[in-house]
Length: 161
Image 1 (tube, rainbow, N blue to C red):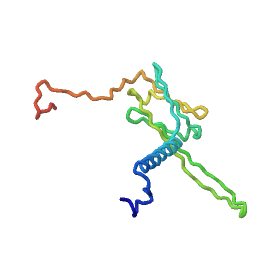
Image 2: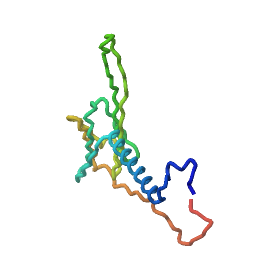
Image 3: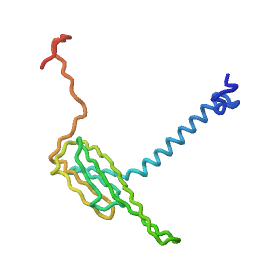
Image 4: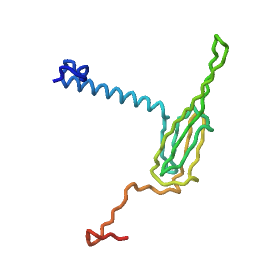
């Protein structure tokens, strides 16, 4: 069946089961490597809920407070951090300096289980940890479902407006 042709390197006298196992291992290794890479791009976040507030702790040790921005989006908080890095290298032979600039950016979205206002949010930065406190007193618990109304008489072609 696969005697000669473009697929020969993939099948070279192996059973289809062996080939599928090899392919699955290849895909799983790629997914694992991608997850490790994605974790490096983001930052660690922990949450804590008390009766009065909701606290978010973000590990942003590589950034300064002026590099960090917090936005309120759709019942959650978007935490962004961005900084410019400059690397200088001196060429020993010529004595010239070479500078390289790069931009490092990371962000994370944290969904909250209640409605809140901008006035309910406070943020502090201490020793590389950003603590965001959201006061729950002004918020209402969010209902993620939409109720469906059913009219008393089930008329297929009419809707109430």
